[in-house]
Image (cartoon, rainbow over all chains, first blue to last red):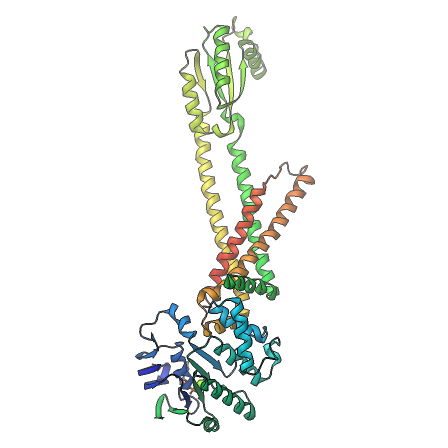
Length: 219
Length: 287
Ligand SMILES: Nc1ncnc2c1ncn2[C@@H]1O[C@H](COP(=O)(O)OP(=O)(O)O)[C@@H](O)[C@H]1O
Ligand SMILES: [Mg+2]
């Protein structure tokens, strides 16, 4: 589903990622670990094509980074869900609106939007929070809204960049358990984290370790 | 349909949400429209005043001395049948002599012992024929009549008038183009403030797979609504100024402002246009 072929992508002073080669299959759970600055975020941005390789190419199903046009990027992103350390919710809107907007942007019909949004919010355990403003929720709840927004359009993969970075340990574990549950239903999940203690919470997950822009070990 | 309705609501909500910067944009648009609106009226009335001085287009037709009363009556009838002509004034030799006396203060019979002044007609043209080309054409038709001795009109003056009218028209058009461009720049800069305050929604929408069109539309709709509101504000102010001028100030400025409903509709469309182009220009930076 996802293949990196000799991918190099650098910023000034050579930082970035170098010569990445790996692939990830449908339905896998992958941890991406390494110290801060190792290149985890850069690797994820290459997947949702916020960055493009200067050498090599990234293949996501039928999307090929070397042949991508700007106007195709939205269609890739409807297949790739993303969540971030800072949640990136729309602060002035309620939970329902934050999730529904992803479906409006993908041109769903009103009736379908409603049932999908309620369904996904129940799945992430926020059925009782539908009409709260995003800012009235706890960090863990906000991250679950972000997950609902990413999942509601049924992506093939969910990317999580330090999803527990702003959460306390107990809530972090709940969140990883939720991601595991989602993965069991068939969505591939890639979690970038420098928190090694989370890894053992998902038995059988693959592990990609990075350092200074290179993959140092892969299972 | 869902999508259009959603984007429209987003645009409308955006307008309500952006209190100060939205109000600022509306005021900028209103000021732009007031400039263009009054500029138009002043330019129009100036051109009209210069171009439509009725008597400048009058044509004098002098009749041959040998023409009898019946010939003159027939010719008068012919003039009445020409639909380019608005008014016809017949000046008999006696009336011409009186006019001469009034203008020169001397009786023509004191100088000569007979009246040398021929009978004549002075015709004024309907307004659409008050231009050099039509006057020339009409004069040459009349000249062909055997009863006509001479046709006179202010040819040299009309040539100069047309030349200046063209210059004024070009100047007015250039000024308008510049005003419109300035308006668009001002509008788009003030809309940029609105967008800047909400740039988080743009990056979020792009991350979740919204097309540029989807991201753009609410802001463009919001800008167009601001344009409409700015136009309404400008329309009210212009209406008020015209009302005050025509009802209270006319004794100071001898000038009556006349505008039609069409004029207000045109200003409204201009407002929508400014908001639409301005917001499209403004959002380009943020995509
Ligand atoms: N936008 C950027 N401009 C310049 N350098 C960057 C940028 N993003 C990341 N880098 C550099 O690339 C390297 C990898 O960064 P990143 O992928 O964010 O690491 P991680 O997410 O593992 O902490 C770091 O050295 C970082 O400083
Ligand atoms: Mg990072």
